[in-house]
Image (cartoon, rainbow, N blue to C red; front, side):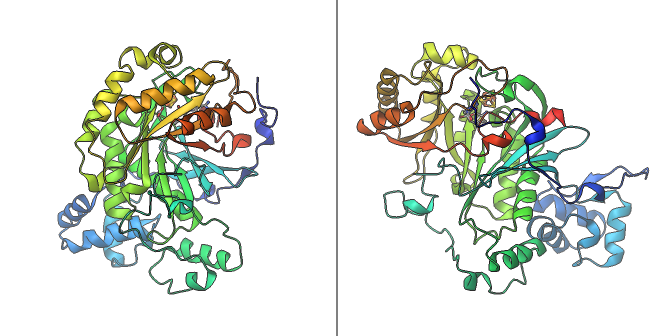
Length: 438
Ligand code: SAH
Ligand code: SF4
């Protein structure tokens, strides 16, 4: 049942050197190491105050860590050498999550193993041009004419090399390097999506998902979640405010079972890194208390919401997502209705098409009815199931994805098909698991 195009043999994966694997020096000092990355502006101010420094030095720290993306306290040149030394002596290091390994797909997708302490790694995925999941939510370039026009206040997005050759002074070094590459025609994406993990493994146990096989190993901290993003922005030379980058919290784990860290990361990414929450989407398998908490978040800090519906009714959903026994579709929808949507915002229903199980024509009609019954502005993202070792489902038959889309669209439901990205490197939805095999 495995897709023939997909290699199961890890030796066939294109593994690239992340470039900094040898850079780590083990700490022999007795001083306990503490990470600056993960602290918000207020905490950085307090830290500086504790060292007898004025509060605005905290701002400089935030600038260095989140904008210049320094990886080392020594590189924070806005601080005097003596102050940098005092920070280091007190045990402070930047401590950002580090990309340890890179796998590059033939389609340009990159999958990263990101180290977060000890032997554990999580997976983060870079998808140049996205995977279609962003379509119809106002954040893709092909959608500007329709009713999902660009969110108000979004920055302009110049792409010509001449425009990109403007002043680079305030940009991180890697961004300047990337622009140099772009000027040579090397950077060939006009928008991109980063898929972020929120836990190592997952406890939810959806039957079709490879991450579920790991069980839950550990929650990530806010700094580790935001650190994945900043490390990828740095690697790709993204210039925040100009480049069009979407974030999806759809990697390993269930964000709403690690709620405080997930939202802590969002706050860092919005307030310190400068990303827009309207270009972020969090996906949940339907953790009702999490959705209810999410409904309380202020609009300026809240990502968009996606629900992994994945089935046309409770009966089928229970079989493939045991969590449905705790919170059924109606309970999930009741919680979703509490979220105050922004103008033109829609809730996404993710729908994995499992051959013979969730992809039949009558299922499409049921999903359309269900979507209408919610009374919510929704769009449906169809995902053809990505196979994984030891998971005994079938991919949807050729033509059934398009037939499903056409049926939903015919019933007036905005429906998009997500392109599988990076299947050859196990980077596609539900394939993120190889972490522990490092
Ligand atoms: N835990 C969250 C977010 C991570 S999973 C959630 O479940 O929503 C992100 C998306 O990938 C979910 O919509 C999930 O249904 C989908 N998915 C999981 N395994 C998949 C697979 N093997 N093929 C295709 N999509 C999959
Ligand atoms: Fe966890 Fe999401 Fe996979 Fe379900 S689909 S097991 S919630 S990661």
